[in-house]
Amino acid sequence: MTKSLQDKVVIVTGAGRGIGREIALLCAAEGAKVVVNDPGVAADGSGTSAAPAEEVVEEIKKRGGTAVANFETVAEAVPASKIVKMAVDTYGRLDGVVNNAGILRDAIFHRMSIDAFESVIKVHLMGSFYVSHAAARLFREQESGSFVHFTSTSGLVGNFGQANYAAAKLGIVGLSKSIALDMNRFNVRSNCVSPFAWSRLIGTIPTETEEEKARVKKIQAMGPEKIAPVCAFLLSDAARDVTGQIFAVRMNEIFLMGQSRPLRSVHRGEGWTPQTIAEHAMPALKSSFYKLDRSADIFNWDAI
Image 1 (cartoon, rainbow, N blue to C red):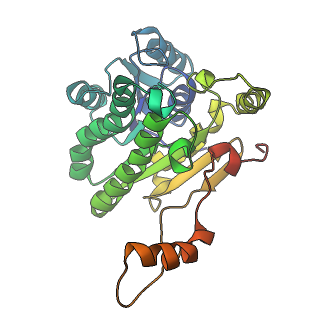
Image 2 (cartoon, rainbow, N blue to C red; image 1 turned 45 degrees about the vertical axis):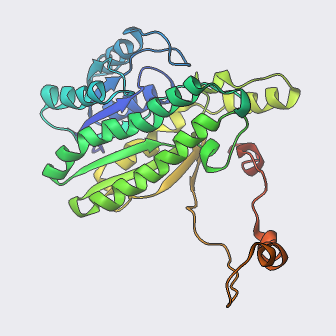
């Protein structure tokens, strides 16, 4: 059987554990040479360790694949560019980037520290930009390449206590769409994946109430290995016509997620005043308002 990523060179950030690890393993199994990037930080971004990335590289080699470990942070521009440099220096080219690296610093909004907000934005949003930006010129020159960015229903729908994470993840959607638009002429693709899977980061969700415990138990049944096939596909030539999209993956379900479009409109020939907006516009639009839904309210059935 032909391997879908034969001889391609792929970077996977945050590949030492969880979803990133499974993506790296599958990409290698599908024939890719993989740069396994992970500085080995804790879930909140503290500390460093070479062990997670090295263990994944060891596992890939044991299975007959090709990989190299990289320990740079994505949260700063220069270190992030070194990840791309390592791919080119080691394997001579680069074909795909998976922006998976992430940390969590959850807190209810009025208690969230500035540091907690900025640090999450730096890793998720700025990190996705830094690595993608470093790879973009290579992709432009060779007129091929694929970006896979990780978003979340925390941003697409909403969750309690995650203003930093939600802002970063919805920002990544805008980043991905802009890359898709700007680089389409060079055959460069950019898509988002929103994963439902048990990981170290999900393990930080509070489980104080019975409802929260039940929710987390359901998520625990969703293995990170279920996310990897969609990512490997999006990196492959079989996805040459797929760009600018958002896919959610939950166990064996793949969802194409919506993107913001007008729902309905109101018009007043003489223009609006605050009073006529209150009397006319809002009552007319109100039936189409979104509720204060959370991710669990929208995806409220058991995973298949």
